[in-house]
Amino acid sequence: MKCLTCKNPAKRRGLCDACYAQAARRVQKGDAEWGQLEKAGLCLPRRRRRGGWNKKADAALEGGK
Image (cartoon, rainbow, N blue to C red; front, top):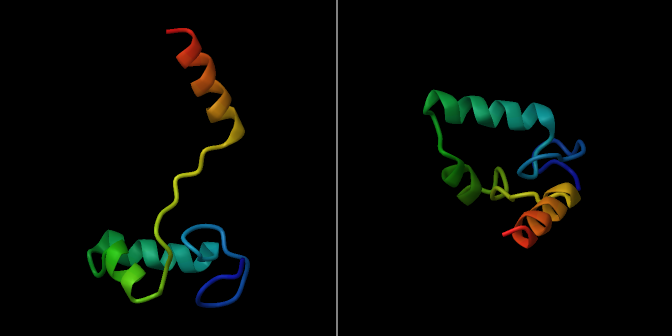
């Protein structure tokens, strides 16, 4: 997937590292909110990533209850 703004490889919220850092700075400063950026098409909604290790740990812990 390519960055929504600069076409470099996207990593988070549809943005590359540099564009994500710029967006995060604006959010941190209070100039914008993630929801506003999403509505404007400047980023994607947050996705919760569940890696293989977490799934295995969840299964093991549930089995131990």
